[in-house]
Length: 140
Image: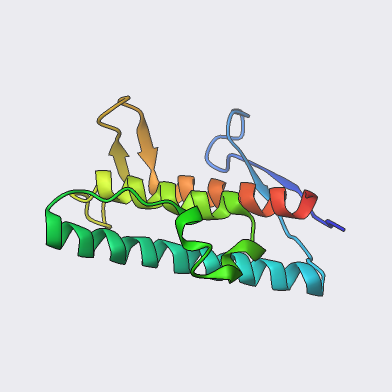
């Protein structure tokens, strides 16, 4: 059961402007959901690091980029089948983005996508992605 508290916070700088809102979510997962969160986050970290290591090793040998997918690792590591595949695909997408933006230092919090020209904020994107995944998992 998903239990949550939603609080709306007005923009603190300008009280006459209602354009910016923030929502705070507090979830109270039960024991089973807590275990599933831990497994999912652990598998996401594992698959990201494993794919990164394989990409680096392949590039050192062949000087070409390796295309790898989380499904390729499920036969070797059966525990990856226990978690949601979309979370693992999210790790793959994050790895692709990191490779595209490898020239960006971690101190750069905002960057412009060279393909579409959209301005992205790393902190906002991470917070939105984590919230969306938690809500999706709690309602599934």
